[in-house]
Amino acid sequence: MNKFTLTGSALIVVALGAYAVTRSSEQIAPVQETTAPEDGAPMVAVTLPDTLSSEGTMGKRAFDAVCADCHGDNAAGKMGIAPPLIHKIYEPSHHGDMAFQMAAANGVRAHHWQFGDMPPQPGVTRADVTSIITYVREIQRANGIN
Image 1: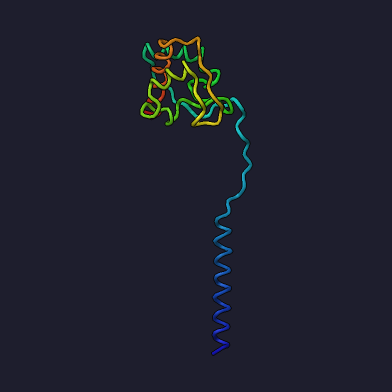
Image 2: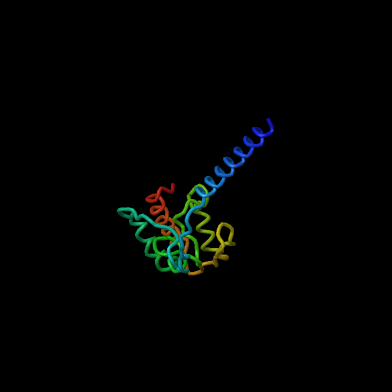
């Protein structure tokens, strides 16, 4: 009986070892080299709406003049510089329009992203920011952010 017990135990150990080796080799994915995006590269892909409202068109002009240097073309963000505004974090239920007004007027302490604080934008009027908000919200809706 001891020979059978010893042989059976050895077979179980070998089978479990083979199973463990097979499972671990299946779970190891091949390593692929990737390069980090360069600073200034867009952070998100943005789908543009077919058309912009007249207020959205004015907002695009203001955004391009004041905001795009940091937040990128079409608010896609810039890697290493500033976050995308076309992102769920900035949906109206989380960052309402007044948050954008306050950010332009007072600046923003970094809290969602690791880009540092946003300085105030003293050359931008409330009317400018209202148009910019319209532009950003129209792009957000085109990207499923409501």
